[in-house]
Image (cartoon, rainbow, N blue to C red; front, side):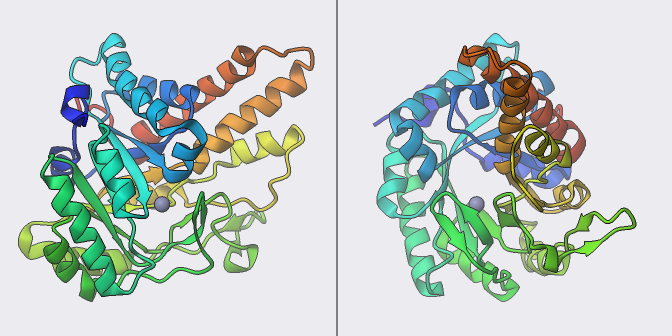
Length: 335
Ligand SMILES: [Zn+2]
């Protein structure tokens, strides 16, 4: 058993309390390789932003759970090396689908886990989430639950349409499970194809404009928690799918027609509310792939991974920094 405190990591408790009060959101970036991790830590350490390193079940399968755990540890030490004296870094399991998986992560140094019972009948979701919370809290590990179903595909998680969170259920769920934060469904979705062209309208330039998020549902959820001084809300599937990177991919041989994400203005608006954690995965994939495609097109003779992965890393630092500084408002919140 390795407790996260031994690794220099923190849980989300204080981090979210500050974000809730301060009107900003903490970025939760998924990672499954070295370059992503280096880029996330570089951006967070430079901007002194609290940050959540997320590992999905698919990432564990790809990179190996043990390796990822040590990369999480390495993140803290690397952050210090970069001059961030007190790194505020969470190592979080994204979309845990069983008690056993959550327990395994808790026993191996994770400081936060998500148990996603959103696809289960309500009472089963409550029971499973409570079971994970009861175990996690013994070790100071924080737990994210989910109510409502998000559309889209993310690793093993997929659904073909979303069901908005029912604000009538949130107090009962949070109280009975004891969870520390709650992921809700207000129209964000997983992946780089969040909306079909049919769901969108077109602006004057003919570009696709996605339907707005259901801020009324978020408002309804926040009202329910008002009496207790608010509650940390989480948004999944919140990549913006930057046009710049989709174009970079497509210009250099990629084929990503009609990839579309959540406009950054909507994420900024959400950050100022009770939304304390915003999940971003696809944007990192797109930045990485775009940079690698460009590199190969411009240097067909290159075959050293440091050359093209180095370019990818640079592009990702730019993207993560942009999210921290210009979108979520978390810059300087972990001095
Ligand atoms: Zn998710």
